[in-house]
Image (cartoon, rainbow, N blue to C red; front, side):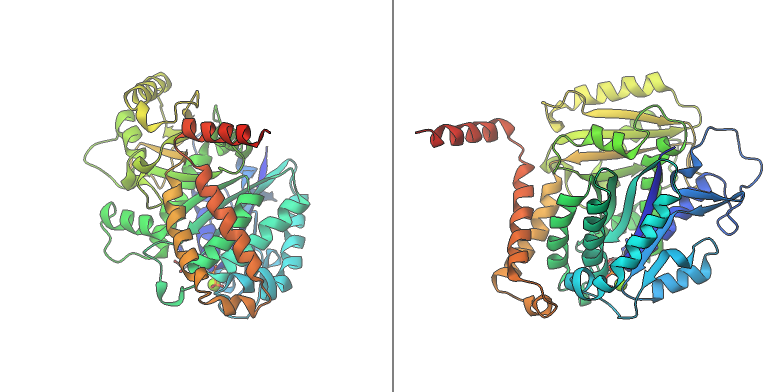
Length: 441
Ligand SMILES: Nc1nc2c(ncn2[C@@H]2O[C@H](COP(=O)(O)OP(=O)(O)OP(=O)(O)O)[C@@H](O)[C@H]2O)c(=O)[nH]1
Ligand SMILES: [Mg+2]
């Protein structure tokens, strides 16, 4: 059994994380108030301990929570019996807002505590596989403290997995107080590139659109959006938790999806989010997960090409040969959307247990590594550059002791990353070869 320690950082990270562990418990028929198994569960093979600790017949979420402000965590601990205050660190310094607060000034006061709690959590594991962190890189805590946490964990646990679910800035954030979101995001990307094995990219524009168009909600809130994230993460982690054939660990997932170490920024799509007129078919689910409207990040997939994908189908009675046959056909009919140099662009994985939150009898979740992600990054980095060129808002970071060099380095690393998602590899290789040739005397 490979255990994962989950870290919730900042207001957003804690709210998403809180939704996630409850989703996991519901899938395994565990009471989210008492941590006890509910009787009468069908007999399926499960790996319960991946995200949960078992203590005297009770299951508790294996989590470390941290935030620069107290309210979110305090109210979670008060309302959720299973969360333990000894795994929570927070301060009462109000909104961080700025990356520098989370990374340096206020974050520095918390990091020892967080690392102690992470170590304690790891010590309780039998076969510790790694960490997963939930955060947004829009505000100060999620971006700055999140970056500090991933870099410290990488330093101390260099051979363990480090995965994140990261909410990126978009057109539907509460922008009033978020003039700094593009700086915060750009600075964080520098750390996510260097210190993580994979990042699941999300944004609230896409989540809001799904709430609106698929769930028919005019007034939706974080609760609804976080439920969508939970459904998707529960979907792609289901083969880890229930007996699956492929991708039964985070390491295998990253091995199959990451062709080059820096290109580890995934998109995720899921279907169905709501009940349709009829039960979905394998065909319908497959075309849905390739559809832009089912993506949890707002971008147009046709602006890039897929390098690798893992589709997890969930069904109590899956027809595995039909799934494989249909996926082969889909690949053949849509060759142009895949990078031709990857021998097996679509991996499939089947989980024989469906989520109780799923409105239908079968579902599919796809995690992809596509070059179209660069269009999301372009928007963030363009705004970063426009402000940085004018040194706008910079004083807030410099007052906390940051140096302009950190901005220059982050900007250049982020720009490099975008160019590495190059689509025309033939031309790129030629350029490289010409470059080498030019250097010769
Ligand atoms: N999907 C989702 N997005 C959220 C949630 N909470 C906040 N956000 C988004 O994340 C952004 C940052 O908010 P917080 O997470 O509260 O910020 P923080 O990381 O705590 O940082 P500071 O409060 O600035 O220290 C907001 O502007 C929202 O766009 C949530 O529960 N779910
Ligand atoms: Mg906050």
